[in-house]
Image (tube, rainbow, N blue to C red; front, side):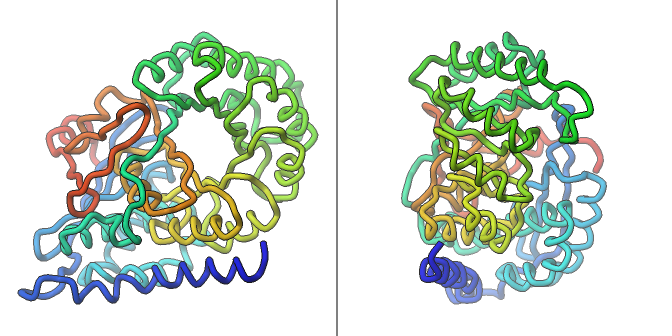
Length: 401
């Protein structure tokens, strides 16, 4: 990446970092700025891959905002939510940058702290939009698209994890209007890459699953494969070669993100685009990753990367490097809506993740429900995120946090 383009991205991010302070002037003249005064947390059991951890932050003016703290360590995340919300109590809703700087020493080192801080920051942006009477995406520069293309991640909902199992879930996603499907068919491989045992049968099983999905979705829909960092460099190079006949939309996270040089070597050799970055935190982490040439598509997760403002900065950094951005996010509807508010404003947005088929009551969780038509998510013009939690659904499906 050239120094000039990098500096342009940093300057762009700094511009957005300064936004909240200037928004106070847009509040209605009567009354003072709302301040944070309470926190609610709801744990919703989903499946063996984890719970949805939903956060609702309240203010002294009665406004509330929602956020997604899913897929950290629940016990640790709950502790960080309590700690960080106590620090926010009494602060004005526009104090986003203060909050980010206050939590940064912890979020940079602890994934659960990062998820907790992001969820609370999501709440603040939702509340800000409501207080100002505008959709949150207007606070990030205004949307440049009305709909957000989605891919259906069928990995968490597929059972049994066999070729037939994946094919059946892919067929269901196609029937639900999705035209891009992702699976992670190598999750049975050990995360330890020392290879103490023969993993070739597991690799062959993974290929069979991907081939079965390609057959059922046909040649005109997009197929995405996530390797979940289960491969060595040598295995990864062979993996990319073997996948060429399946015409992948992308091949994701073949080796661990550290060192990025291994991913860069696979990226140079691969005929298809490569993608990744779901666990990387902050602009500085993505700068090293992008500079190394690790991937063709950057995948920050709004829950892990540092929050909505950090997602915007990372998208700008990727744009300066000539890369598309496709936020990672096997999330609740709240997490998807939060990410959509940001990437609706990003010129280099590509496609957004959607966890398909995890629970039959997903559509009940928020009001109005997600509007998914022909594999894309509609954006609301209502203030904030344009949604509220359905308290009846929360009462039915949540357990005590």
